[in-house]
Structure formats: structure tokens, C-alpha cells
Length: 364
Image (cartoon, rainbow, N blue to C red; front, side):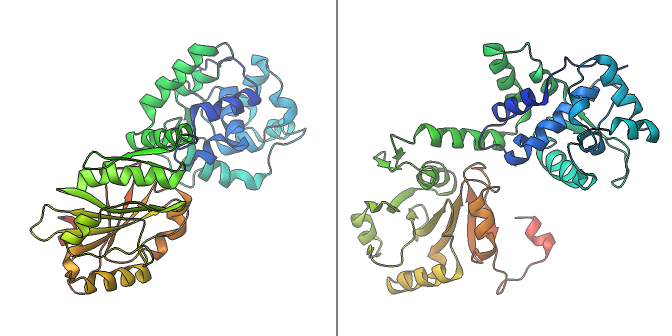
């Protein structure tokens, strides 16, 4: 049995997708582009919704025509769904201005559905089917499909969207959204950072400052026993804060004209303080082997053992352009941390001197 949702033109679907998946949503471009709007429209059009018997395949989307999409009557919608798998009927349905060519199957299947709408809980992919099967396999989640009812507007629509986001977006995905929105909200007033000693600094607005704030307030609190900030710089102001007293106490001479990173943290909990050199990456500038070597020269001169020095590259998200651009250059023996997943850390383990089996590493 198929209960067709209320007809909604694909333009309405396209208008609502960016509201449902705001900036910061994983693979957002696959969820909000025109192809996504038309894919969701066709699923609604034929009733490929959780609880119904009908399912969607990419061909339903790329063989839809402009003329047929405008036919809102249930008879026409049922006809498209029922006759689609019959070759002769399908050829008749295809008359008109096709939305996409047959070679659009892969971007609909792999990008819009597999990498876009399925991971964020908008679409269900049916199981127990061969990967190469041409049979339909996708349905919209019922609460997602309900967001495109033209009668749902105003505060009611906002509440329904919020409920969907809370239910289906993972904690890390919701963090991505919150980070992006907070960055937009702070665009004019700057980014206020609270240091471990409770002092505050106002950084210039921008994505780098948002990441820096998270490193100081989130990363340091989670991964350092007794954190302190020795040095923090930003592109518009080379030295935002500098703790010369503490730096001198541990024997580190900080000079602004040296090859220093964006931030230097110190963990005072170990008997021998641990220096953490941090690069903040919004677009570029990770801890590379060259940067690592330059910093080691500085710490060697100050008398620090290599075991007292470590390196961190901080990103907003694993899906960010900055990470994709710089991940191949990350130095071995360093760490990577993501604001959107604050309790996790990636280790670029250098096993040259201490080889281990995968079983040993799996115990870490």
C-alpha cells in the first residue's frame, strides 16, 4: 500500500533543504544542491517513503521530465511509479525535457544518496541487496519526508526541522553545525577566548580564531593535565598573548621573528613539562616535517629533550577543505585534532624506531 505525500514542487524541496542541513552539515553540498532537491522530490512524487511499499532508484530521478514533474494529480504520480519498470511504458514516460542524462546515475547514487542523504538520516538504503543490483533500494525517512508538506510553515516548520536535526544528526555533526553558526554569529564582535588561568582575549573574527578558541578551551582541558598558554598569535596580530615569565621559568626563549607556530601550550602536570606546538588550519599551514624540524632546533637550543616536545595540527572538521588540502603533508610523530570531534585525536605514529604489530596498536 502506498500513501502518496502531499504534492510539493521540487522548487519547494530545494528551498527547504538548506534549512534542514545548514552550514557545517557533513557533505552539505551533496545534501542541498539541485540534484538533491530533485532526488528528494521524485521520492516524494512516487511515495518512496518509509512505511510504504515503493522504493526509489537513481533512474527514477534522471529519467524524470520537466513535463511529468509538473503533473500533481495522484493518477499521474501513481502512473509514473507503476509504469516505470515496464520498458515500453517507461519510454512513453520519458517523452519531454529530461532532467538528467543516463550517465547521471553515479552522482545521484554515490554522492547525493550514499555520501549525502543516507549518512545524515534523511534516506534509508535497503539491505540484503547486491551492490551491483539495478533494483530500487532507497526510501525517505518518514520524519524527513514530512518536512516538505507545503502546509507546514512558520514556527511549526522550524520546530519540525529542529526535531529532525536533533534526532538524526550525530553529535559530531551537530557540533559542526554549531561551530559554523557560532562563527557566523561572531563575525562582527570577534571571538572571546578564556585561557586556563581564566584570563580572556578577544581574537579577530574568522574561522582560524574559532579553531584557536577550541584548542585553548576544549583541547587543552581534555588532553593536558595542567595546561597553560605560552604563546598565541593570529594573522592580523602576530602576538596576541605571550607568557614570558612562564616561558623563562621552563627555559624557553620565545621570539616573534622565529619560525614559531600559531600557538604554544605547555602541560605542567608531568615532572618534565611537555611543550605542545600547535598549528591552526582553516585553509593551510599544518605541522609539516619542515615545520617540525625548525621547532626542534628551537627546543634543542633551549635544552629540551625531544620527549618533552610534541606537535598538533588543529582543524575545524575532517570534512573541511583545510584538512583535505594538508593531510598528505602532516608530519609523522604529530597529532591531528578536530573541533567538531573534541574527544577524539588522530595520531600520525612514527614507527621507524619502535615497530609494532597491528594487534599491539589496537590495544592503545
